Image (cartoon, rainbow, N blue to C red):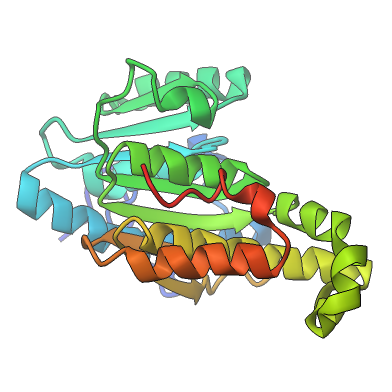
Length: 285
């Protein structure tokens, strides 16, 4: 049987998934107009497909249970992930399922809207909003099923977590990036802590401060999610080898006990002299 027009079968080099719109990949400049793919595009597509393997079962679970599924992609950029998710999963649902792309760069929102219109992807919306503003925006529903944030820089990942908590998201998928706030607070109190805590040697040197701050930030994020009843898993996003930021955090709401992770989070903040970040890593609504 021949593949549907405009799609391609699985190639022997695992470049394009079956059913994937070739027109979409050309519009995203992953494929050239004559259907060729360079090494950079091949890597980019491999990354998105690998992430899709984690997200698709979550979408399927919500769809099977509720009948529809909503997803918000924060810091959507050019919306590679959103468009490919829609093409591979949402397009054939024929219901009110929807993807919302949130992006602060107006020109990218405009171009994504135009592309969705050209492709007939009516179940996609693109909003020119900050993550914080999206929490109260009437353009978004009161609850969201799945929230993603990929390489949302610095505190944008935390804002996406706050959005997910406010929207009672069932599933949260994060690839954090560029964590600087915790490192800056560690640096500020380093001198005082060095005198009384030998473990401060872990972040005494500037490079170690940055790397340790990044590690601690993600630990605090996981504890915060657990303190709100989520089951959290952390893994390496294989296929993103060229990037140092390849940690993948997946949180699924299970209404788990909250007291112990909340206590541990506050203990970590206190032990590292990070008490001023209590508000950012809040553990109660």
